[in-house]
Image (cartoon, rainbow, N blue to C red; front, side, top):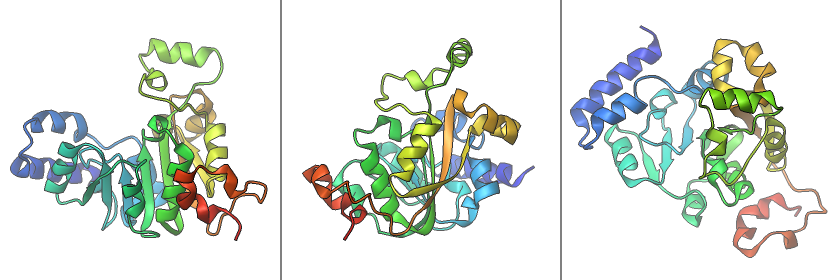
Length: 252
């Protein structure tokens, strides 16, 4: 059995003996039967198993068992946070768009993993600015989300396969690999790689070639220390409620 399989087996047994959640059997079956699609990429190629990771949208803590010592979760659902802490992982019940999220320790995390979050947010640029602040110099952000598949054939094919995540009625932001790359660069990140997580597990080359056609992208970015906006973007562009978070991006 692989190391990942051994970890899953140990955690499954831990959950059965410790958890008081009424739906523990369903949670085990849905979230702890296998490792997530992004996990092998982040462990093998980017050393997330050796990094202190902040997991945004940590759900029941299923990814935290693969990350390095001191990793933590952020989740909005109270029962999910309680379940995660029962496993022995620190988890914060926070809304990432509220000021309380900004009070997490600055420059304290080696890496951040956020998957299926940014497409739901009212202020995605502000979210990226806050993540930038939490990373150590040279820290990594792994940002995953659905994309709008390009061309005429890809949306039709994905629809026939029942893959329609980018059309969810809860999403209010929509991206392509190119637009999210630009957005990350303008928030102070250097994009090192972009993957189609599931396709890249089959073939890294296939994952790169078919990236624009969906259904999702995982961008690996390095924090650019000392990043600032172009001088033409002055603080007057920023709304009052975002000025404190965006202040480091302005020229002194």
